Image 1 (cartoon, rainbow, N blue to C red):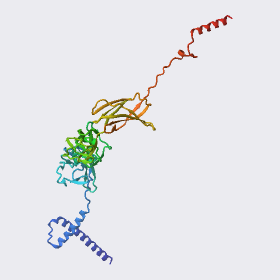
Image 2: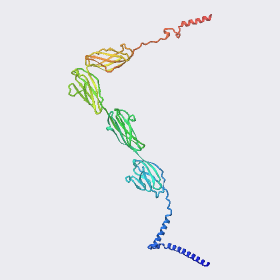
Image 3: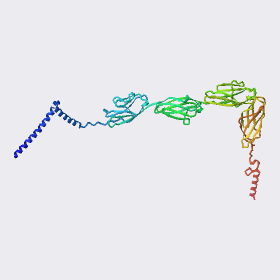
Image 4: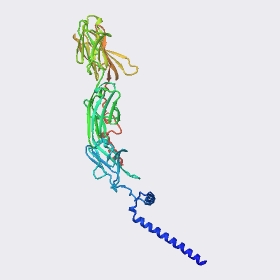
Length: 492
């Protein structure tokens, strides 16, 4: 029984070993003749597919090669180039092969690899055999911040700053109203300036008869809007006319422009005399002038009424900036107030002249105690006096009669001395009054007179000359008597 069991076990063992050996032999045979397998057999094809699937799974499980992180070796740089020149911005990376970079200008993408994202800007390019950015014929608008950045899972970047320099240039300088403004109106001067770095702008003016002077805040308000610089004057005065300069400068160079400013104003009428003496059937010429530009138009009035050129009693002659009115008085009513008026685009102005028959006193002057004046009168003179009033609070007018000049003329020059008029020393106001056959007339403005009273000179004599004194010199005999008394005492 035991022998039987032993034989059965040995049979199972041999069978197992043979099956394992056959399996190993089948595997070797399939590996050797794998290329000759005919996949038309569905069973073999399925078996091959399963094995291939197993092989693919084994290949995917293998790790890929590790890529090296690219670095930028170039350091951030400040580039400065003159307008019109070429500039190369460096971006050196490691490793160079296989690394892609992109360029940005002011955060706007311009290049990725060698592809230009701004085809309209053909002056930009990637330099051959490099990753550097090349800018040709640089312009001021090219100034800015350029960034070179790697295209990878963890990008790195550097920033370059580019400044394209350009000399300042005043493109245009202008003034409001074409540089011709009325006095009291607004004036704005404008300067359009280009340049890089941004230029500094100064203003100056050369006025008539003066040297060039820099303008400051007291002269006007300064402002800047982009590249437009302005000077604003709220209310222009006549003395602000002149040649204005806009001066621009930076570290590259300078430039300036100029413009003329003409300040016009309403006319200012001037008259030769404010009072004119005449008489019936005596021609009188009244004169006025106004020199402003634009040239004014003149009109004459008599007691507020416009004088027409056709009037027989008047004749108006105007030439340039002067206008004369000739009056032919035939009646007392022809005397009165005549007004000269001048008008231009900026306004009008007038002055009045009195035509009278009373005496007219002019040019009253004082020189020490001497007074002088001129009298105009076509009528005979009757009386003349000087009136004085002290500057003291209680001063009263004092009348001094002046002798009438001899002869019969229309103009009299008079001189009058105050030395012997027994006036107290002090300050006085003096006026002159003259009467002719018609009425009294006199000086328009008082003159100041300073009266000084001379004091007698007191001569000082030495005390020894006219009286004795403890400090006076003693006579000789007094000294001698003193000596004799001394000797007498000694002898005793």
